[in-house]
Image 1 (tube, rainbow, N blue to C red):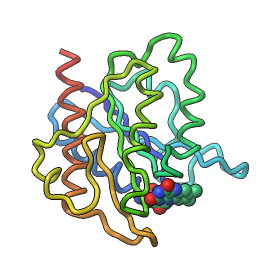
Image 2: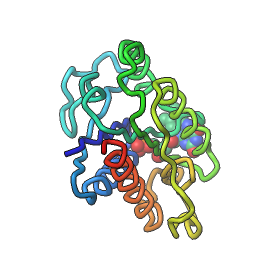
Image 3: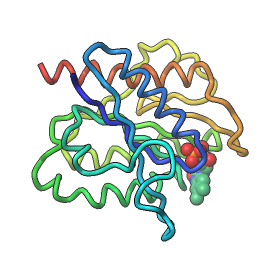
Image 4: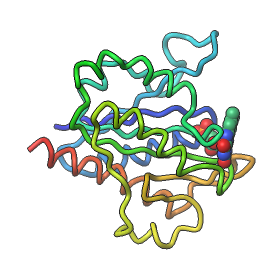
Length: 193
Ligand SMILES: Cc1cc2nc3c(=O)[nH]c(=O)nc-3n(C[C@H](O)[C@H](O)[C@H](O)COP(=O)(O)O)c2cc1C
C-alpha cells in the first residue's frame, strides 16, 4: 500500500475541502491510501495538538509518504506563512535527500479570480523542487481543464472562493481536485514499481 500525504493549511475551510477531494481521488486508486495532515497557524496561542481535524504534520510523515499533495490558500500571491514555516523546518530531510524522487502536486484557493493562483502554485513548487521532488501537474486531457469557468490550472487544482469566501467548489473544480489526487497516486505507484 502506498501512502500519499495530503498536507494543507486552511484558515477558512476552502483549502481543507479541496484537500478532502484530492484525498478522495487518491483513495480511488487501488493500492493507494491518503493521509491528511495540517500545520498550526502562527498564533502564539496555538495548541500543540489540533482541536479537530487531521493531526499536525511531522517530519516522519514526509519520510514515510510515497508522494505529496500540498495545499495552501493564496496569501498576497504566495503560499501562506504557516506552511512556509513548516517547510523551513525540513532542512534535515533536505540534507538527507529523503524526498528526492517522490512525486508531488500543489493546489490553492483564492478569493478573487485573478488574485495569484498561478504564482502561489509555483511558489509552492519551489521548496519541493529543492527537495528533489517530481512535480506532477494537471494536463488538459482532463475535459474540465477546458470548460472550467473558475479554478483549475495546469500547475495544480485551484478554487475561486469569492470575496466573501462563499462560493462553493464548482463541479469542474471538484473534478480536477479528484483527478489531481488520482494522478498523483497512479504516478507514485508506477514509480514504486
Ligand atoms: C492575508 C491574506 C492575504 C490574501 N491574499 C490573497 C491574494 O493575494 N489573492 C486572492 O485572491 N485572495 C487572497 N486572500 C484570500 C484567500 O486566498 C482566500 O480567502 C482563500 O480561499 C482562503 O482559503 P481557506 O478558506 O482555506 O483559508 C488572502 C487572504 C488573507 C487573509
